[in-house]
Length: 202
Image (cartoon, rainbow, N blue to C red; front, side, top):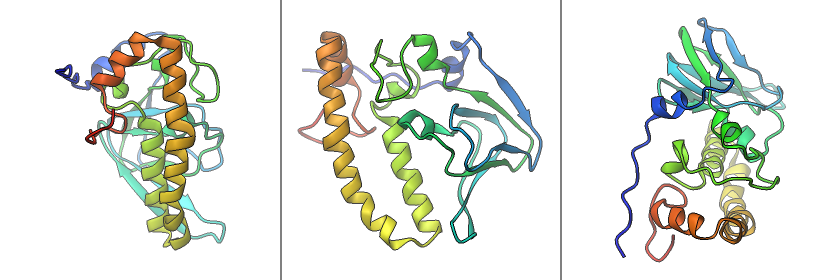
């Protein structure tokens, strides 16, 4: 069976569809976008400029764990149920950022993974991979562990990823297939789970 060609993700087209309540904000150099400990209630798409993500450990050690630029998303931890920001985002240059959470709101479904899915979201970054939130959270955690030289955190990433995959992702897939039937099966056949295709998996 020939797989459908995966659509190219166009962030501008994605954000252009989020007309209902879309927020575009300008940030000056060194201005804080959000702070560590703030409520995690929005995702940002950087239209212009650079933003750095800083994490402060319990011992007060500060580390830059990511530098994001035009075309990048930040703050996506809220989509995995993260209640608070685990880092601080600061503009490195004058920036323009768009709240990108609107794809879920406009689709009429819940953002939080523990709440029922009301509709199947297949646009935006979900046209590239089926689980961008979990992948993003894993990469962010690995980056923080490396920057803070936390060996035990790195050691726990693999078993935590396996638990997440088998205990959450696969269960979600069974739930979505039961709820959306052929619509989800077509989506699953054309879009890889984590952005790459492993032989024998979908």
